[in-house]
Amino acid sequence: MRRIFIGLGIVAVVVIAFFGSAMVASEVGGEVVTVFTVSDAGEPVETRLWIVDDGGFAWLRAGQAQSRWLARIDATPEIEVERAGQRSAYRAVPVRDAAARDRIHRRMAEKYGWADRLIAVMRDPSGSVAIRLEPTGDAPNP
Image (cartoon, rainbow, N blue to C red; front, side, top):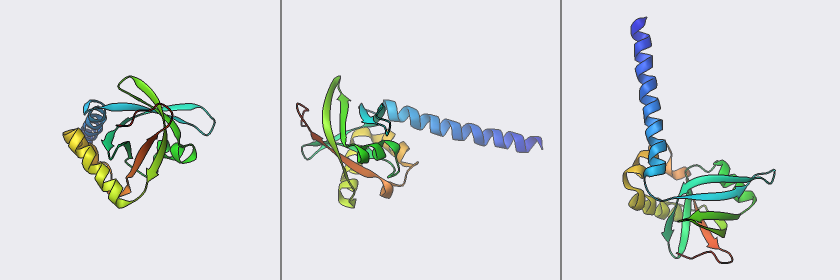
């Protein structure tokens, strides 16, 4: 019985360590921006995400099509993004086709390297959604 508890304890430590390292990787793996969306109740919600530049636009990636922040973008695509200390307004456009998804996956892998590979273990890449940020007002174009 004692061996079972020790084995379960080891498994628990390994699982916690893996998910903890994934959380650290998402924050220290490279550039992280803050995305400001709006909840159903009209309250601002902050989400920290990775970002890449491609084809004259900045892009985000939802690791799962069911992400809450992606649902908020679907409901209200006018968002703000804080990048390099500058907060700018964008219209977030989810692009749900395989070619865009795969291209943004490649850009994320190039930019975030080992951290992207670690995070990729926890998601099915075919379920990801690429989000193009179209500048509004004075937002910079990459």
